Length: 82
Image 1 (cartoon, rainbow, N blue to C red):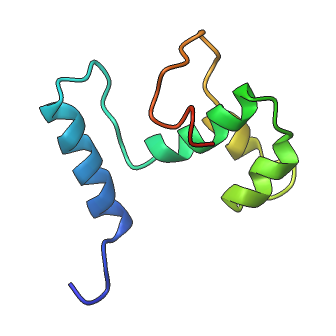
Image 2 (cartoon, rainbow, N blue to C red):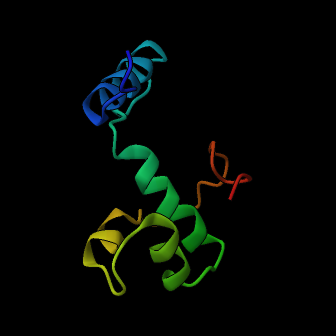
């Protein structure tokens, strides 16, 4: 594959991996994007930093929709990475 993986293929791979793992949720290509918004927010980082890192426009409503509600869950793959 000379051009690399496209976004649809990456989403399909994540969904298949989640199904094989027996997850109660259905991961999609947006799952990592959500994590890259949620974890910095939980850590108290300013939205402006997350916007720059993720390529969102300043004040992005889309970025804020990606942020997951804090339900107290702390042990996930990105928690100690960010």
